[in-house]
Length: 442
Image (cartoon, rainbow, N blue to C red; front, top):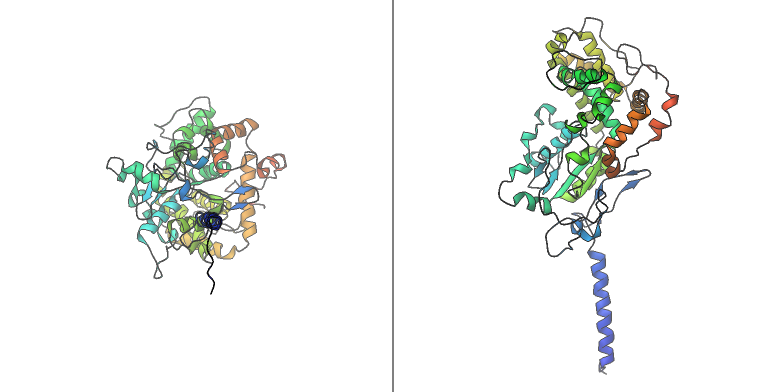
């Protein structure tokens, strides 16, 4: 056998080849991956942005292994590169955390906070027989208090909060500001809620008369229009400055000060939960099960009916009949697309009295849900009422909404002038959808 003698030229050739090969291998394998080794890619749909997952190598950190400018990622609030996190942001309320899953979630009112708080509880305490995270809907909403979760203030040792934020997955969800405002009015003022009738409602009526005053209201304003409510929200000293249900997400969660690694949207929750599960290495499949949508509808019913029935005496003291209470709950559930607009109110006048159990009303809602199988029609119901509500507003009202929620529109990629609302403003046909005492003509 002949044995080849390597010359200096040969050695240089093989050294170069080896260097190129190593660089190629590093390029392939040093990519953001989930727990199964699959690459994490950004997910987009036409015209909307889904949850954005930032790789762990792109997270703010003081680690010397990463560059000080966070690999060039830009803070959209400033236009400058994100810098290392050196102090804990001044949150308006303490975010929820899971130390076990190295996860922080910033809850915001009217942006699915009850649902996602229950998800955090489920992550910490609940598993099915196969080790999967169970649905948040298995936890009653009455048991979904944030006191069941650890929060950022749980970390008390010096530097502990900052270290956690530097290393954890940081989760926040957004919602279309137009739909968020409508949802707040529908849940707190349109449907029976004596607390908000006094606190928001009376303030809205007073503002309509020319002056603003919060608190100290003894009377109930149960007939506040959507326009009156919006003007209370967007006023310079309005609810957007003080109420967790209406503060911009960007401000509530300090999104201009903290680089969130997981940014989701209510409108794309299912896909976003898949990405979240991959990032924190858990099995989460409940949202793909056939029964999930029905469970969501029933959960909405339980929340709407249970609360109102427990406030019956207060509602009567506000001068509102129990028949109106029942009818407005029924219409609210139709507006939210829980069941069809053609489902007639099932109770006769005065049939709903102080002795009727909430379970009977809930049973009627469940039956209506079972008959409402046309998902496209249910979606249309929600859109029709949204358009009808916004047709009450002036151009100035809409400009003020865009001004107050400008950062939410920017950071979550929402359209400030969606065709659904702006193209159809002068084409709205009255359907009586917002009149709880009239038949809905869809």
